[in-house]
Amino acid sequence: MIDVKFLRENPDVVRASQKGRGEDVTIVDRVLAADEARRAALNEFESLRAEQNALSKLVGAAKSDEKKALLENAKKLANAVKEADNKRSELEEVTKQLVMQLSNILDPAAPIGKEEDFVVIEHVGTPRTFNFEAKDHVELGKLLGAIDTERGAKVAGSRSYYLTGSGAMLEFALVNYAIASALKAGFTPVIPPVLVKPPAMEGTGFLGQAAENVYHLEKDDVYLVGTSEVPLAAYHMDEVLPVEKLPLRYAGYSSCFRREAGTYGKDTRGIIRVHQFDKVEMFSFCHPDQAQEEHKRLLAWEKDFLNAMEIPYRVIDVASGDLGSSANRKFDIEAWIPTQNAYREVTSTSNCTEFQARRLNIRYKDGDGTKSVATLNGTLVAIPRMIVAILENHQNADGTVNIPAPLQPFLGMKRFELV
Image (cartoon, rainbow, N blue to C red; front, side, top):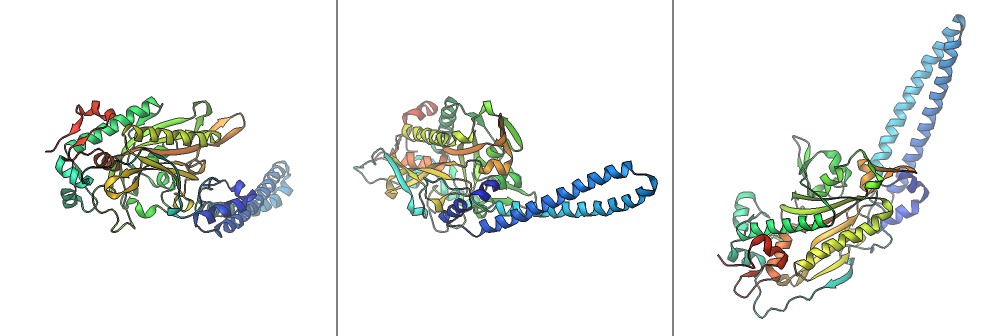
């Protein structure tokens, strides 16, 4: 959540951010009104408690004939203090719930607009010109015995699939290369839980605008994560981190689950948009002053991965209306998909500043006191979409597929053959 003190001092900045996202602007005034009432209730409570403390001292020093009257007053004052404390507590909760509805404050450099208003930062590589009719990843997956969407649908429903044979081996190779790359960059590898409690999901901002895509197991009141960003962010929940240890970087490998609500009829063919997939996610806890530079580093590591896979791509600066509530700026990398004649998102990285850390109560301590850390996340590899990009970009006329050089040691071959 955002800092209420910042909101009080800069309400127009927050209003402009809400407007840029296409979200409710009037909530800013509701938060300010609730906060003013909360502070008035706090002052009333503290004033009555001070009066109560002073009266307690008088009672202790009073003679017997005075004590009865003082005790009667003390009883009335105790009731007033209790009522004032209840009022303060209620107004604090009202204010907190309103503040939780505010999205993170936009980076001034983020493009303003809807999904289609992104800004292309750069193009890397040149889309391949085929001297044969290129096959899509579904057809290639069948020829290689790598992807089975028909049995996936039979067993688990639409947007489900099996990776078999070379497809399964390609996933293992991608994960191993991703973790090796993350280790080299100083990340600690993590296999996190994929079932989390409500505070973890709410704290990372996934129970707001993204709630419709979250799987909730009502009987146990736990959630299946849509990204390991959630358990990684909550890893240090309610902790104070040593400032000299920052940044703390983790690379989480997990399965991810998304309902894909609102995407009926979109990307129904193949494994581009599915309900379950595996991913290696980078996550960083850093000093707020270093967040923008850390964001650039995460993007650079993502680019290194795509470069190693020899896949043409572009980097885009995501428009404000397409940002998640926690991100104040986000960069996507979109790989070229030949049979779609289009770039499609394969990784993203977001700077969430102190927004998630305030909600999760993650702080650092230095000479100036205790403050919230900044959190950032970035996808190193999302398996299904990377498989799509590799198969389609490195295919041969006969349906075989050349394996990118960095993956060959993990697979013990240079090419996927037909089955």
